[in-house]
Image 1 (cartoon, rainbow, N blue to C red):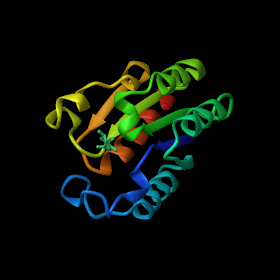
Image 2: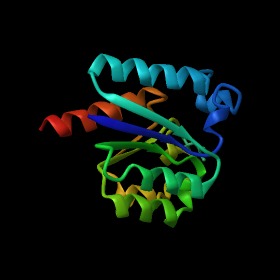
Image 3: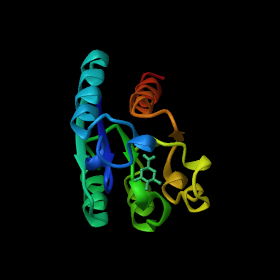
Length: 144
Ligand code: DQA
């Protein structure tokens, strides 16, 4: 089984950006944690991060035909991007939306998610453990 973990804008700044909200773990720490978890579970994982909406769309399209599940934290594009929603719908690969912070408990604009409409599930406010929970849910689904 192959999973793709996609992170959108500013998630490369983890550990530096608003640590009171996003914690002190860096993006490199997150990548390590995801890779170790994938190894433990015996699945292949690819990681992708970009600050550019079109690059995120390209990464989703590039997963077509070679990926069994997508874990996606689209960052701020969650709340604005019809293009990312459409890309997820286009490839129709099982996808789970992850947010490190509890988006429903923050500013009202963060409660809107376009991407959610193409996702099986949303995991929000579980810190970086949310990525591992999303991976487990996709792995569980595949095993049926
Ligand atoms: C985020 C929440 C978004 O509202 C924000 O724009 C982010 C990170 C999260 O992981 O909590 O960049 O997706």
